[in-house]
Image 1 (cartoon, rainbow, N blue to C red):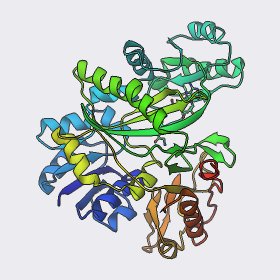
Image 2 (image 1 turned 135 degrees about the vertical axis):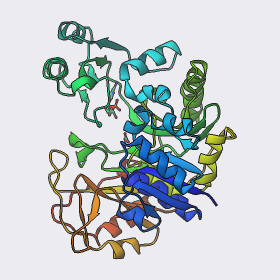
Image 3 (image 1 turned 45 degrees about the vertical axis):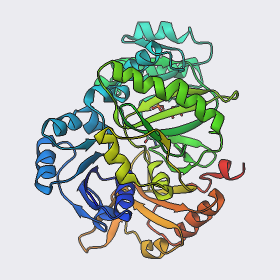
Length: 422
Ligand code: AMP
Ligand code: GLY
């Protein structure tokens, strides 16, 4: 058994901690959340304080630090840990550039022949406005840097694309992150979130997952951090998988290695699968996705702890990690995503957690002054279930949701419906 320190405090981190705890490992988290507190020890160290986190890892004598969110990875937390002699699962700042800069990631893909949409990178409004009209279909407009999932506009008209350009390059909508903009040809097809655990050379893959980004049923309304997810995604057949490994995963890992920045951690390839069954990269992330990680951890039929340790030791083998179907339905606070209400009392979690196959992951919860559980804004809970078949997993998740109540709660009733009808 090993001792793990998880950096972060959302649904993703709770799911990773839950899985490691279920495997018998000791779980610490910084800062963690009330869900993680039930299965391990939380430490109040903020994600943005590398010196304090190194000190904590050393004091606890952990076997492995697992970094959840992108910001500390982009800021070099994994490098600081490694330099201090602490074993850490997560890429270097150099490898994390794949997520930190969309312009750089497009250049990387072009250099390595990795299939992705045609693009133009611009840094001035004049350049941008001229480029917009070179796209027959209105282009997707992307702020270059990290923008908490809000930096992308899938424009329906050329005018909308121009407005998005103005917001970035004139209005400073995303600050420095929007000072460079990528215009990209719009891709059509079905999106898949594909997670590859790597030691820099080998790939251990998780089940292909699908996220539901829009707030409203039928994929309507504004984008969110993700209102639900399920795995496996039926569109990702063995044939699609083989193409993805050969055309995307292998050249990405080899390309980074050749550039002296081997990828140790989990590479999240956001894919569009077109009508011909060909995969295209929509974006790279350098961490586990949220909420996708929740069903993936609940359904995983292989040891996570050993796999993460092997990635860091450089002893991973190429494999497709097996898993059972699972789904998570996110319950968000009132007003989300435009605003987010805090302090609403949450009831019924204990009963919900007793539904067979169900685990409720905490994302935006906190203890009230009276010691009760209340909302802390944004996405509050991930109600997650696994079963032999996806439709049964979904039935279980929704049965558990029926037990839960908080003021203004919002959730989608159509999570996974597309897949469960296949
Ligand atoms: P990203 O942050 O790059 O993943 O973009 C957020 C979302 O915008 C993606 O999950 C897609 O739904 C959409 N998107 C991004 N790029 C494209 C594209 N080239 N074509 C169609 N949709 C896209
Ligand atoms: N669910 C998408 C992400 O984590 O970026």
